[in-house]
Image 1: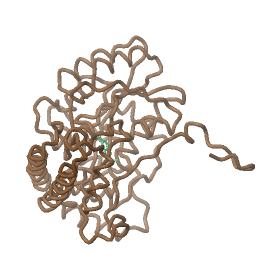
Image 2: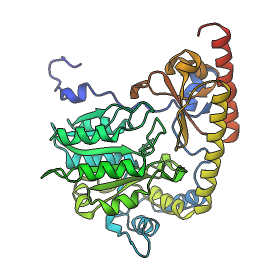
Image 3: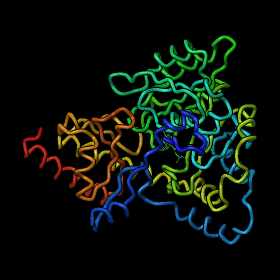
Image 4: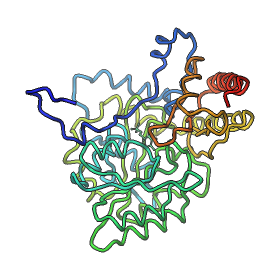
Length: 391
Ligand SMILES: Cc1ncc(COP(=O)(O)O)c(C=O)c1O
């Protein structure tokens, strides 16, 4: 805290902000622990890497790096409009807001639509960027408790939104990270019907579908269905997951141009580099790569679910590219404790105590070899813990 005379004070909401904690990098772990082999299953990335077509497109864009990028992202918008539109229900290029990762889009939406002192609403254990972006702008976050099966309680959330006149935006991740759990079409429609009609106070509902391509459950609705039905709905997508471009930072919202045009006013004009724009456009076109990535994830997710069953570690059903394990019930240790034990053996998982889930550990799906290595580490730790009688 800065009591130092002469230094200006940051606002209290900045001084108390807990910043985002990224997954631990591989190189740092190797250096610190002197390990040769380290596997990172901690950031829900695509273990296949980027599509070769995306790499080629980015490389070719390098030639023009003395130029500013296309601030209007004309080509990517057109490609996205084709991707999300149908002949009967076209989507216009103006229905997209592009950000430096969907993180930036979240930030832009909050800064555009909530004033300091107002609020956003979401669930406990929701993707943490909502709360961080809100607090960074002096906006409060209302969080309703999870259901017993670790899902968003949309009835409680609707009540909270209706009750508190400060709420301007609601964030629903479907499936959610880090829980992997989801809400059904019926739950979402009931929620939207309730909050879309609050007298004189339209509330924006942001449906974060970062993991949409991985979804296999028919219970999860296509977000475009809800977007078409409810004008206050916005949908978030990202190129960081199935498209394997987390490093390029490309995410976007689909929303009514009337809403997005105000975000455009405060967006930095060159928030996406030309190689990133080119890579995203090429990745979107590589449907075979996406199909393969989904298949690799499905197999990997099953592998982890079987492994956790075998080790008698309970876990929650997941519709993403990760699984949340209840290591407290399985091994008698907290998530951070199991994280440290596994780290020493070269497997980086993700403790999620900062999400209010101290007993859980999130495991991202990797390649087959990475999954096997990670599972061997977890098994070794489990044997040590249980064999050592520390349960
Ligand atoms: C639910 C959810 N939304 C959004 C993101 C952010 O993705 P990015 O900023 O990389 O687009 C993530 C990343 O983990 C996520 O889990």
